[in-house]
Image 1 (spheres, helix red, strand yellow):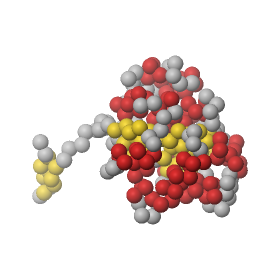
Image 2 (tube, one colour):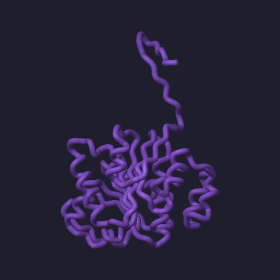
Image 3 (spheres, rainbow, N blue to C red):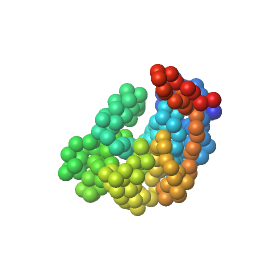
Image 4 (cartoon, helix red, strand yellow):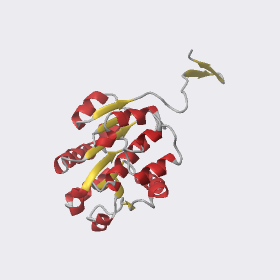
Amino acid sequence: MKVSELKDKIPEQLYKAISANISELRPAQAKAVKAGLLEGKNLLVCTPTASGKTLIAELAALCAILNGKGKAVYIVPLKALASEKYKDFKQRYGSLIKIAISTGDLDSSDNYLADYDLLFMTSEKMDSLLRHHSPWIKSVKVVIIDEVHLLNDPSRGPTLEILITILKQLLPGMQLIALSATIGNAEELAEWLAASLVVDAWRPVKLHQGIFLDNRIQFKK
C-alpha cells in the first residue's frame, strides 16, 4: 500500500510528516489500515521486531489528536523505553502536538498533563493516575499498549491486566492499540481486548536457523 493512499484519510499535517520519509507502508501497517486503524477500531498487532508497529501507533494517536477527538496515552513496561519513545516522537511530531512523559512519582495526580496531547508512561504510572482520579483521563481517546505480551509476566502482568480492564470500563469509546512481537495465544487475547487481530511474519532482515559447533555454523536449509 502506497502512503499516498492515506492522503485523504489522515490529517494533512500528519500526511506531510509521514510522506516526507516513507513512500510505501510495510505489510503489517497496510493490514492495520485495512482492519480499521483509521476508523477507530481496536487492534492487536502481533508482528516481528522492526516490522513497523510503531507507525501503526503513530497513525492512531496523531489522527485522534489532530482531528480533535482527544488525547493519546502510550504505555510501555520500562522507564527507559518511555524515554526513548518520547524522544523519537518529540523529534518527529513536536511541532504538531504537545508531548509529555510521566514516569516518576507514583503518589501524584500530575494535573499538568491535562495541557498535553500525547503522554508516555509506564503501566505502573498510569495505574497510579487512575487511582488518583486524574480528571484529564476522561479526555483520552487512544491508548497504546506496547509489549502487551507482558500480561503473562508474574510481576508486571497483574497491574497491566487490571489497568486495561479499568480503562475499558472508564473509556468505553477509546481506541485500544496493543502491540507485541510474540504472543502464544493471540486469538484469545484479541477476543478479550475486543480487538481485530493483525498478524504478519514480514521482517526487514530474514532470520536463518543454524547450529554452532566447533566454530562453524550449519544453517538449516
